[in-house]
Amino acid sequence: MSTLTESPAWLALAAHHAQIKNQPIASFFERDPQRFTEFSRQFGTILLDFSKQPLDETAIACLFALARQQKLQDWIRRMFSGDRINTTENRAALHIALRADTPVYLDGVDVVPEVNAVLQQMAGFVAAIQDHTHRGYSGLPIADVVNIGIGGSDLGPVMVTEALKPYCLPQLKVHFVSNIDGAQLDNILRNLNPATTLFIIASKTFTTQETLTNAHSARTWFLQNGGDEAAVARHFVAVSTNIAAVQQFGIAAENMFTFWDWVGGRYSLWSAIGLPIALAIGMDNFRALLAGARDMDQHFLNTALEDNLPVLLGLIGIWQINFCQATSQVILPYDQSLHRFSAYLQQLGMESLGKRVTRDGDAVDYSTGVIVWGEPGTNGQHAFYQLLHQGTQVFNADFLAPCNSQHPLHHHHTMLLANFFAQTEALMRGKDAQTVRVELEAEGIPQQLIEQLLPHRVFPGNQGTTSILFNKLDPATLGALVALYEHKVFVQSVIWNINPFDQWGVELGKQLANTILSELTNDRSPAEHDASTSGLMHYFREQRAR
Ligand code: F6P
Image (cartoon, rainbow, N blue to C red):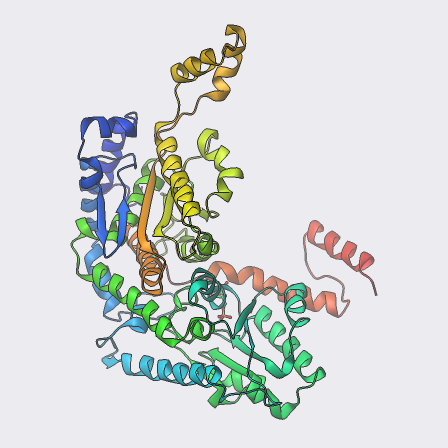
């Protein structure tokens, strides 16, 4: 047994869970008419309602005791003060500095001036594209921006530009290419004019195979369709921490936007990786996004655990995963513009928390990160909610929605929210056999058929959900929501004593892909592969068109 699962706070939680696990969530509401008020918190316009979670006052108190036992507040302070808490890479995790307006120190040096200098550089570039001082090689203004990046160098910018569509400036279209599958790049390039296209090559390391391959192909397309070497500088910029590799690719240092090794890829949308966002929504809106995140940072740093939204969200997840045995976290935004939000949170959660050893390298004997998935409502309702209502999997669900839409079809929004509220209520209440029986009898269904149908029509309910409502999905609110989830992930990592800032698990596949690529391209005989891998490679070689 590990020190965590043998610790007093953990044992208290396990004992309390055993006591209350058979109490329906609905019964908590019957006993306590104030439950909604007591089990919800607000920060700015963000309301976090966890009253429909399967826990009571004692469970919450035990979770706070666990957080204190794991020294959560110390860890928060350590992150904010630039400690090298990413120990396997010997790096700080200072994404909070990217949106700070007061000094943040790393090794005694305030990094905020450097951050501001890059923001200034971004602002200058965005202005030059917008006011057409920066034009393409033929003198035409830039009309299309193609961001080439993957993982953290793609998902954040994609998610935010989609979410903030109402704020996007109409004269510039921003496209994203991430996959090594050439279909994605080809589909985008075939509609573009090189003379009016700007490419952003976004890669923290500037060594990522997908990004560099797509970047080289884009450059070839540019040169073959009217651009020349001299024009590359006007049409290709890079965002990276690796100046040497950027220069080797052929992008001059002055066309590069830098960031730092203390920014993890999945925490980087606030840095120059956010350049496509700033181009899409304008620099003022980008700064509003940062300001929203900064407000959440300050809330996380300075608010008591009991009223701290990221802490609460993280601890509810701990309760669900480690005590209720949830194996997945569903993200259900009732807002179509958040249609990439769950994909974004998938990388944030699964790359950060998909760890099986503690910070000290000991194997854990408790669950850590779970599968993160989801789709916007109401589409999800017609796809996978059946499993949520009547399947056998244990999951935790976050429902999110703005109270106000940014489109003029207000009656749609009311219907959308009616579905949100109905689903969370239905997941909690379910429908018991007696209610089903009465309904079927009222429909005049014969008794024998009722008995047959009954088990299929019963909903067990008692499924915990967290509801997050906010006024409107403006840049500041989105910034705060993303920071809320970033810090939630950090809270869980502290409880589990794992490092959420490395991602060694991605490396093995990358290494093997390179070996196999050289075998496929050189038609060399496969090295030591298993029979399945060799067989697949052999079949591919035979089948592919020459
Ligand atoms: O998928 C692994 C990963 O290292 C992510 O953490 C990162 O966001 C992505 O690859 C892209 O990396 P880079 O920005 O260095 O190209």
